[in-house]
Every structure is written in C-alpha cells, then in structure tokens.
Image (cartoon, rainbow, N blue to C red; front, top):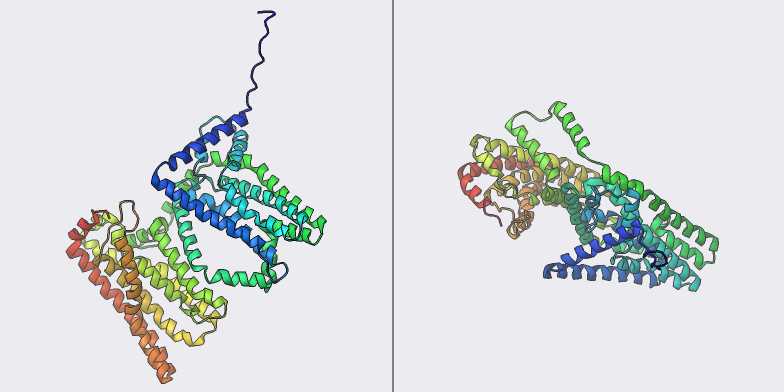
Length: 533
C-alpha cells in the first residue's frame, strides 16, 4: 500500500557464510555424539591430556637455554617439523577428516570453490588448534628471550606456521584422494599408527643422541637441514631479529606467508579433483594386465597357496603390521646403539628381524579363521597348504634378512661376526619356517570378535619369541662357540653347513608334523575356530 512504511528486509548471509555455519553445526553435533558415551568421553579426555603435555613440552623447549649459540633455533625447528608432519599425515590416521569427510559432499550441488573456502574456514574453527598454537608458540618464547621485537617476530611466525599447518593438512586430504576414506586407507592408517607407536617406543635411545648433536652444534649439516625446511623458517626469522637483521627476518616471514597463500590458492582445484576422481579405472586396468600376464608360480595347489599367502601379507592389516613392526624393531634395536659407537649388535639385525617375524606368524591357521574349512573339505591339499605357507614366509623374510645381515655386518666392521651370522641365517630362516606352521597347527587361537588378536595369541607370540631362536640357533652356534674357545677358524666356519642342515631338517620335519596334525585333528581345530575370542 502506498504511503505505508515497510521495514527493509534483514540482510541475508552470503552462501559461503551459510555453508560455513552448517559445517560448524555438523562438526559440533558429531563431536557431541562421540563424547556422549563414558568410553568416548574417557578416550577424549585422555587424548587431550596427552596432546596438552606434548604442546607444553614443546613450548618449554623454546624457553630453555642452551650452551651452544643457535641451538635453540635448531631445537624449535625440529619440534615444529614434528607438529607439521602430524598435521599432514593426520588424515592417514583417521581416514580423511573424521568429522567432515569430503565424501559427504560429493552429491551436493555446491560449487567446489564455495565448498573449499567453507571447509577451510571450518578447519580454522577447530578446538584442536589451541594445542597446536601452544606448541608453535615455542617460536614466540624463543624470540622473547632476545627482546620484545624478536618476540613480535616470533608471534607472527607462530600464526603463519599454524596457518601453514591447517592449509597443508587440507591439501594433503585432497591429494590423497578416495583411497584415504576407503577401507584400505583406514588399514594403512592403522599400520602407520602401529609403526609410529613402535618408533616412539624405540626412540628412547635415538632422541637423546639427536638432541645432543643439535644442542652441542656437532652437525652443521643437520642444523642447516632443519632450518631450510618451511617448519624452520619461523625460527630463522626470530634468530635474524635477535641479531637485528630485520631485512632477513621480514623476507623469511614474507616467504612463509607466500607459501601459505600459494597452498590456499590451490585448494579449490585440489578439492574439485578430490570430489570427482575414482580408483576403479586403475583397478580394472591392473586386473586386465594381470589376467593377460604369464603366471610366475606353478599352476598347482602348492603354487596357489604360495600366491594366496603372498597376497595376504600385503592385503591383511594384521600381517602387514606384524611384518613391518618385526622389521622396525629388529633393525632399530641393533642399529640405534651403533650410532653412538656401540656396533656390537649391528650384524645381528637380520637375525632379529627373522626371529620376530617368525614369532608374529605362529598363529597362521587361527588368524585365518574358518577359512580352514576349504582345506578340510579336500584333505589331500593339506601338504600343499603347509608347504605353501612355509615357502611364502621364507620368500618374504629370508632374502631381506640375509641382505640386512650382510650389509650391516660389512658396515659395522665386526669381522669376527661373519661365521656366527652366516651360520645363524639358514638355521633360523629354515627352522622358523617349520616352527611357524607346526606351532600354528598345534596351538590355534581364533581371532577376537572385532577381528583383532586375543590375549592368548599375544602370549603365544611372546613365548615363541624366546622359543624359536633357542631351538633354531643353538646347534648352529655350537661350532662357532667351540672354535672361539679353541681359537680354530675352521671350527668357527663349520657352523655354516651345520646351520644349513639343521634348518633343512626343521623345515621338512616340522612341516610333516604340521600336516599330520591338520589331517588328524582338523575337525577339532575347526570347532575351536568357530568360537571367536
């Protein structure tokens, strides 16, 4: 009606702001649901405490004083690198963003540019950034030791490093593609977590060594490396401000800001690729190529078992984790002391890897579950099944163990160890190939209800870790011991043929025992496998 004053319409939010609000509400609802149960709340609190302690420890490293000039910048740069790597490889752990997965938005009619900016804003509105801000503030604390001006440079570097962590994480999620959110991606994330936990447990002897090298300034190359990486640019800017080199400090901060802007500019294109790419075409191509290639293994029951086992070692999460941890622990335990000059254990890294790998696979039939039914319905295949499992394990572990033994023995310079390790290699690999199948058939523990290992299985692995080296290495080690006591080189080297014969005897004899056990007690073993732990 003319002459009637009407109120102007309320301003509406832009599409980007509206989408940003929706994403925040989604994140809050999912997090609230996860913490609703007592178990979820307890796990969340435990995680917060651990991350907070790590962040505070990183902050205190920036406050600490070091005897060597410039060591503070090196330490801060290394710790910042660790946190940045955590942001980048974090998607591997959770399989994409655990609350706002990109696959949720594939079918929505939202342009990639708008979705990219909204998701980036939601990433900056995450509570977990508080802990990272505390950790990255170690650069600010390091700058405040040299005055207020250097502290201001450190504060700017802290904010830019935090922005770099967030945008790098989003770019990593986009680049990794659908594989991150797939089942294989989550399995790979589990493998990475297991390896990280193992590495942290073994780092007690490596971290003090690296810290000592940095704080004492004994390795200019290592110092230059940690500073030239983007994670060390903040510390470089603060160090330049501390010596009043403002031109360098400003240039470094501008380079860091340019890197953040450059990665941010690529996010829309990366997100568009992430939402449209698929892995099916590549899978079809690989299947077609595999079907047209000539078979490598013999087309017999034995060859079929070997092929099946080799595929399982790469496709089964439990087997992959066990094999990688065996390699990591076996090598690190023997090599890390050598970095400080104690090279006595380096020649035995290959034997340690083989022993751990054998102990981890002493429950082959139990881990396979009710797949044993396929063999029970065709009893003549029991021999091929046992021999195929032995051959597959030896093909994976034996060559790598031998290479580790030869290379690390040569590098260590411990020439006295050659008869010992060359006698132990065939005895351990051959004997372990027999013991793994025999113990697997003799003592079978089914997987737990969630598919993971049971406590009984873990106890068997721990006992096997002691039993297998004793049974396999004792006869082969006897000639080197007698030769060392009697100062006889010929007697020391006699352990090599003894190891070959003893390993062959255990391989064949225990394989026969495993075959008989499966043939005579197959129904009873299958009945135990039907009951999950």
